[in-house]
Amino acid sequence: MTYYVAFDLGLAGLLIAIAASTICARAAFVSLVLFMIYGLLLAIVWVRLSAVDVALTETAIGGGVTGMLLLGAAARLRATKASAAEAGLSFRLAAGALCLLVSVALGVVVFSLPDVPPTLAPIAKENLALSGLGNPVAGVLFVYRALDTLLEKVVLLLALVGVWSLAQDQAWGGIPGFRVYAQPNSILVFLAQVLPPIGIMVGIYMFWAGANHPGGAFQGGTVLAAMWLLVMMARLRDVPAINALWVRQLLVVGPGAFLAIGLLGFVFADSFLAYPPDHAKPLIIIAEATLTLSIGVTLALLVAGPPERMPQQ
Amino acid sequence: MKFIMDIMTVVLVSAGAFFFMAGTVGLLRFPDTLTRLHALTKVDNLGLGLIVVGLLPQVEGLLSAFKLISIWVLVQLSGAIVSQLIAQATQRSGRQT
Image 1 (cartoon, each protein chain N blue to C red):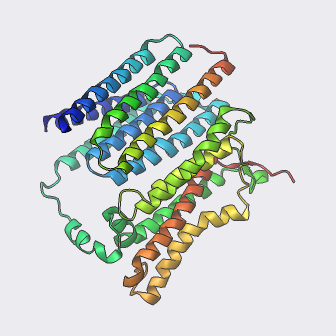
Image 2 (image 1 turned 135 degrees about the horizontal axis):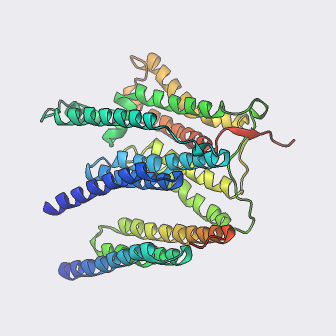
């Protein structure tokens, strides 16, 4: 038992140290790398809290996709020299004061939590078998809180629209300005040829296993996105124009299928997003499969950025 | 039999941990990018390899063992390629430290 306590204390100390150095780092690039390490360490914390689903998501999103998004942003900032603008002292003090306020408020809340938290977990677990799912997290996401999950996917699409709306008028509908490395015999090409078959299999497995074990659409979709980005980065496939029909279809197929299943709930079950008892699991699998695909495409296009040039005719 | 397997695990995982420590010291102390990369690849290869081999006697079933070995192979693949890419980038930019 004491080993675990020592490990947890070390982990917490390391996490705080990395968080502090993320804030204190002078260069944006250093700060970003530290932030990605922070995401990976946080994933280990979630594993220690027995929340493996959250740990997988944290690794995929916090350590992976967010890191790539921020690296892209940093590269753009460097190109425009916008990072040279220093914030004034009063701005920094205000930001520090606000952060302190949030931290203190969070601390007060954490320490005033009741010893025995009110929980719905036993009831939720008892009725989980009705959905045919074995993983309680998947049960909460797709049965008890299906509306939240649906809205979450729509928010992801809205975020992509937000990124796209940064495009200049003449580039609208064109090809994202994703940085590709145009070296024909580079070792990156080899990696982009070898890894995707394995990665795609892992991504599909993560979604498939998510019904009964930790995993799910988001984690699987992130792996698919990473594979597609790798292929585009190595120039094995071109970055598609954002007005391509297949891109749009892949983006909406997941949320669309989920919404359609939800609406069918009015007809075949008693309310929106309710599943007919006998067909709950197949319907959830269909929703999750299409969502995995859509999440993968959405995340990859988020990283690819706003369109910058029109396709050559 | 169980005892021998446990001893094997302790010895191999400790050896793996030693390579991790040596690699980290190298990463911190070596003077330029290429030598630091050299230190890192030892960690990926020997450190993780020894830990995986050390954990193999503890797993139940062939599938788990296969998963562990796959992790090592994948880390080997990405580690080797990423260090090549970093080395190439270093050469292109002409910055050695």
